Length: 292
Image (cartoon, rainbow, N blue to C red; front, side, top):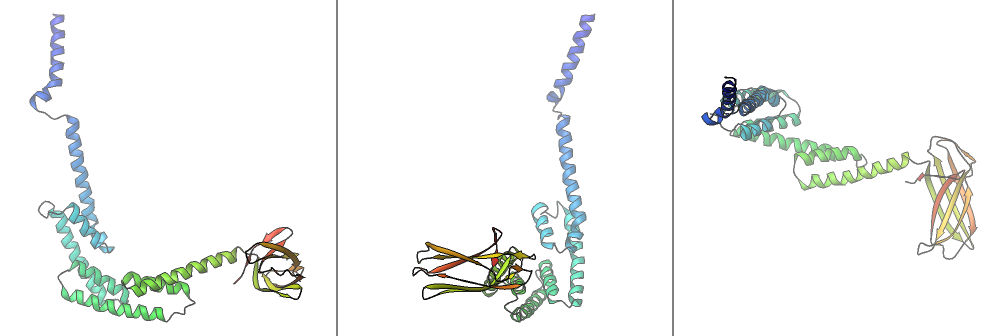
């Protein structure tokens, strides 16, 4: 009897394993995964629906519409998505019309009209109003840009960059590139000044008879006191080959911050002298200088 009972238990266990395959039942894991995917899709769609109003209020109508077109294209399959879109977009249209009527800013009117014409693509009056306001804005911004002095590099760059972004015209793109280059040069120059110890205000060299002469002026921009500043002059021939060098010191032994000192140097000339280069140092440490 014990053997028979054991065999029945084995048979029951084996049947419980193969029964789902024999009768077509799906494994529990697959069923759970299917429900999980459905729940995830429903949860994602619910979050999207709840967020439509916030996204429209943030001016992201195109992004919302693109998402609906790509992920929920069929109104019959996703009626709740399309219903909320129609309701919220209608509310956004009313809000934009009111703000356009009350805002004094031409730029904001153009932006709102651009969004409104997206929401109302068949409304020719909105399209016409947008074109008119856009033309006015262009004139206003261009007039403002032209009034800026050329030396005001940053403001010119920002003005023409805005024009170039709003209006696709070669003139604005060219002006933007021009002032962008000028701005980069200005920032490099400012970086050189910030890292310099001296500003070389002027300097020259010339030969007279059998002697060369060097004259110049420097300003201490390091923010600290400089002492015994050496002026080193190196001479090169027309092939940029080194000939000789000589040195002297600033006339002021101690150069305080923002103080200016002249320097002079005279020595035996060489007929091959063609170019000269200048360096400064104090106590064996080279000083960085900047020349306008």
